[in-house]
Amino acid sequence: MTDSSGPPFRADHVGSLLRPQALLDARARAAAGEIDADELRSTEDAAIADVVRMQQDVGLRTATDGEFRRASWHMDFIYAIDGITKVTGEDIVVHFRNADGTIDYTPAGLHVDGPLSIDEPVFGRDLEFLQSRVTDAQTAKLTIPSPSMVHYRGGAAAIDPAVYPDEDAFWDALSAAYAQQVRGVAELGCRYLQLDDTSLAYLNDPAQRAELAAQGRDAEHQHERYIRQINAALAGRPEGLTVTTHMCRGNFRSSWVAEGGYDFVAEALFGGLEVDGFFLEYDDARSGGFEPLRFVPPGKRVVLGLVTTKRPQLESKDDLKRRIEEASRFVPLEQLALSPQCGFSSTVEGNALTRDEQVAKLALVVEVAQEVWGYA
Image (cartoon, rainbow, N blue to C red; front, side, top):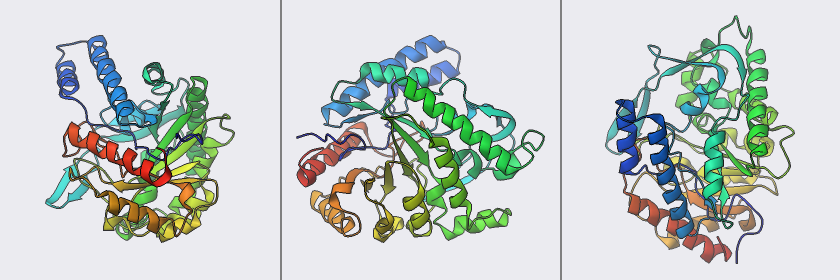
């Protein structure tokens, strides 16, 4: 049997995949000026064709390009929005944590210094290549950062008041730009779009809310603004386009940023965000319990991220089935699905596991889905 209900599928995955060494080498050679953009893209094309086959071989109905053409899951997209400039010298240090200590990640900043628009779909050419490589049994999924990600890191301080004198004007323009993106990719044939978001998960962490409050931002209601603006971006989206969101607490070289369950945002988020499904991290105690799922309305799918991408050890099938059963006490089993908790390579560096270990994790997701629901 197969899942005829469409995406998100019973066995799914978030999007990013470990970059093969040949691709990493080509990227380094391109940065050094040893190969041109066309040769780099040819290497990317070959790597993506191979990883699409891998996803088919393990039995996944979802196919992404692994985000192989990006350096990071979100900034490549954000810098491609007209009106946003990459800024160096104003870098924000993000403190990631893992069992061994901390890792500091310092991405470049951004500045909104012009009218926002997306006249040509960002990653449109990449999507078309992916669509040319999937089989009839696969649905190509495009992953992009949510509108919230443009705002969360810098807030009003990153917006030129000469362009947008208040945040309402900025938000209207940003949501309109995202609506352009949604229409544009749908016109290219996209049927599965995912908005990746750390802000809605970070805001569950009291420490993150305290940090925003110290900046003079409305931490207690920030998630409500984000939900409204994502909905504005999706309003009137084309028929036949499934949209999901993935809420992440940070994923960089097997490390994380925030902690806490979904309790703080759950009622507003699950009841108000107008998407078709939610990819949720549930791979450890840091993720909290399943109780917030009681706010998920009928008709929306919850993809339980029970299989971690941060460690190579393979989960027990029995443990995964037990946790799916626990979640079904709060949302019906027919609304649930299974995936890894995050991508395997949110940035080009990737998490601390091998390609074979990644494949084993994805195969496990498919096998458990088949055993629980009768199909993947």
